[in-house]
Every structure is written in structure tokens, then in C-alpha cells.
Image 1 (tube, rainbow, N blue to C red):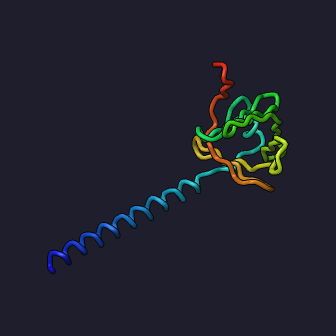
Image 2: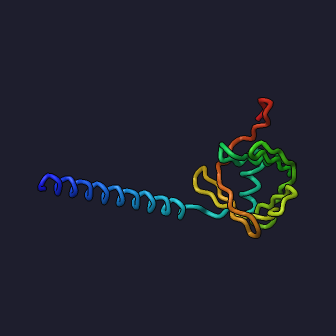
Length: 135
């Protein structure tokens, strides 16, 4: 019985330690989120022109310098336009959730927060890749 109680206590301590570690990791994520800073219209234009926003798996949005927007998402290609209006990035691909986003940045991470319909987007900005070796 004493051996069984000892095992129970060790399991309980392990479970508590795991739970606390999970909470610390979760708290660290929220602290990181607090470091996101809203970009101005000029900063958006300078950072996005000639670049692509991607999650490196599911999508990439290519922002050409002339305002052309190319979307590559889950095997579907679309072409539209992007513009900066005041301090918001506006994306037009002919979809129901076309519209403008507030742009925030923390290090390499970019977050687009919709001002209307649609969900947020997040990813990293990197040099545009055109698929033919050009960047």
C-alpha cells in the first residue's frame, strides 16, 4: 500500500508540474502577443511592396509593387489588387471577405486584423517568389 501511495504522489507531482509548465508556456505566448505594434500606412506600403506574406504551408499573398495582389492558397491561384488606405491594408480578390485590415508586427511576425468580414491572417513577410527563380 505504501508503494502504491508513493506512485500516486509521484504521478500527482508530475501532473501538477506538467500543468504549471503548460500555463507558463501559455503566459509566454500572451506576453509575446503584447509586443505586436500597429503599422502606419507608410510602413505598410514600404514593408509589403515586392514581398509576400505566408504561413509557409497553406497560403502566400504576393504584393507586387504596382498594386497587383497574387494569392496562392491550397492550390488555388487568384489575382486581385492591394492598396493602402490611411493606416490599413486593403485586399481585393473578388471574395466575400474582401476589405481592409489593420496590420501589426512583432519581429518577423505580421498579423492582419480584419476591419470587416473575414478572419485574421498571420504569417511572415519575405522576398516575393514568382515560381520561376525570380525574387
